[in-house]
Length: 138
Image (cartoon, rainbow, N blue to C red; front, side, top):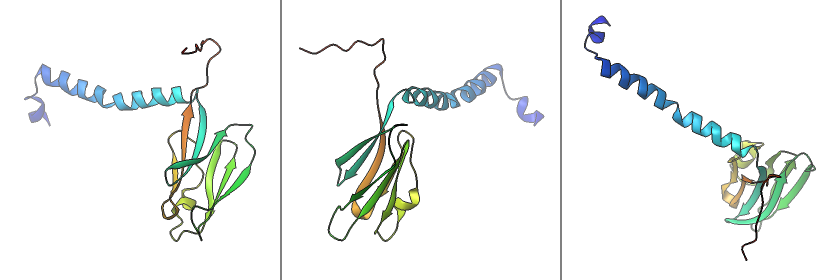
């Protein structure tokens, strides 16, 4: 180890320290953007064949509900909503990947049933602050 250290110069130490500090940059940026998303309202989009068929606000006031979707003949999906979370509760696909995904409740999470081309995606929608002013574009 001492043999390696004697070949390092002052600039090498600065370069190593800078590289280590820069390696934390993605974590800092991701944490910042996720903290900004927590101020937004979470929206669950249910899509079939890429088209949005339902849109649900995930909040404390959202009641526990189940919805039945039939993308094609002999195909069904049961989607359950429970306040801040949503899941594919049941379907008749052979692999059951969407059902095994379980509950999703955070921005950017997705549950997919590929054979039925059903997808649930959680997105965010900005809620206006009391200090923001919205002006019409007339």
